[in-house]
Length: 210
Image 1: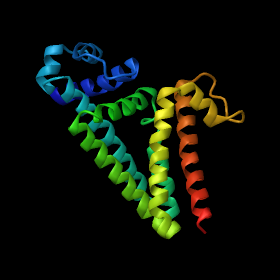
Image 2 (image 1 turned 120 degrees about the vertical axis):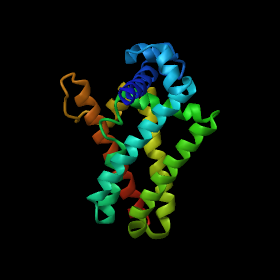
Image 3 (image 1 turned 180 degrees about the vertical axis):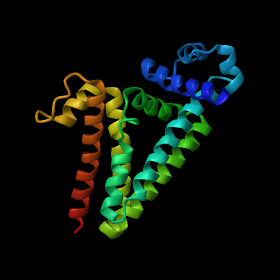
């Protein structure tokens, strides 16, 4: 039962951060959304900071697992690059509440060494994965392109968090297929377009150095 309740509290934390648009949420709000008491939440995690860090680890672990699974089937450098881009923008990671949580975790990392370490590990792994894919394609320019693509991936999340409607419109353009008001379909479409933008940028930068 404890693992189930812990998972419920972590998911509730992500949803509450997404709803509030900030880290200004209480343990009581998180506990209510999870369907448990605030006392039980404190018992499992010790306090709000620990719950926020657990939510951050959960999102980063899910992302890391998705990337590893995507790379298992990628043999060629180009396939690896596409796998990283697509894994960075899965529907699960690009849900509005998760996007909002990503943005607020960056805020948390400014003053919390533990949060900063978690994001540093994420950034190093992303850079390393990109370099493995890019070195055969871009040679000496691989490091510059990897840094650019990593910044683009993070930047897309920031833009999606701050202005989701404007981001979706700008990403999709007039020719984007309609989703008939389906939020899940809209998220999937936006995630697919975001991954395509990363690949297009990579191709452009690689060609510039050819």
